[in-house]
Image 1 (cartoon, rainbow, N blue to C red):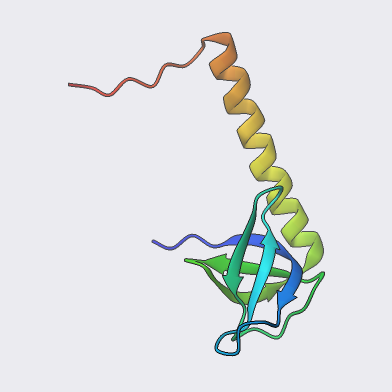
Image 2: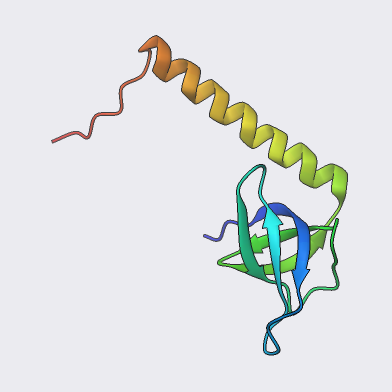
Length: 91
């Protein structure tokens, strides 16, 4: 199973003559990924998998997905803070 994450291209790195690389913001976490094979520029959202942009994605859809990820993270933090869930590995 593959998982692709939406991210917003912050800037394109023009220094590497081999591959077109970009700094991409994934909801507050920035990473450099390859954007060689997608038609996208700064400000566009892309779907990224394994360090590569695999497609450009609609802004509203990307923002909705990132908001859902943030909601999940907050819910997990709240559960852990309340001691409601323990994650023990069965033996």
